[in-house]
Length: 155
Image (cartoon, rainbow, N blue to C red; front, side, top):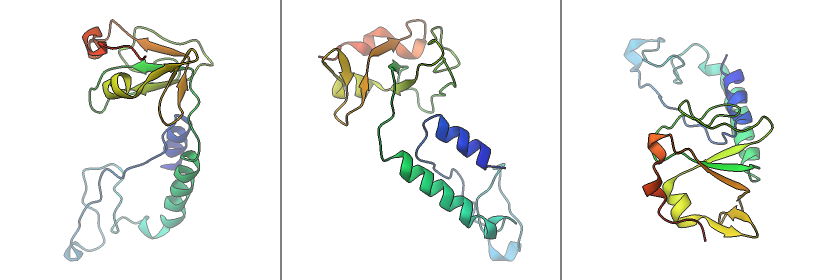
């Protein structure tokens, strides 16, 4: 049940999963899970003894996906709001007033990356780790990406 969601996340560029909840259940509760999570990950759920191969699969996929660099045409600055939602396809957020044509990929960048790490080189926007972008998008209609935060352009 979780594998299709994991595979979709991998296709979207996710390469590091974090278990949000690992519920602590005392042995005195027996073999039942008490959690507010829809998919609790803890030893008292019925599927936990069979989870090893799935967790290993997640680990292998994450390791392999971290071996290279994501290939993206566009970097989109959407501000620094924590837990920002990224969209699928051509929109990088639910509030986006701009969209890319089909077939183009985008990456999201923060203010710190934009102002302190990004530079222009040979007509591309580059980062120290080797990431390269052809285009920077700032959606001026998005309140989270106001122009004053973009006081310096990559040099």
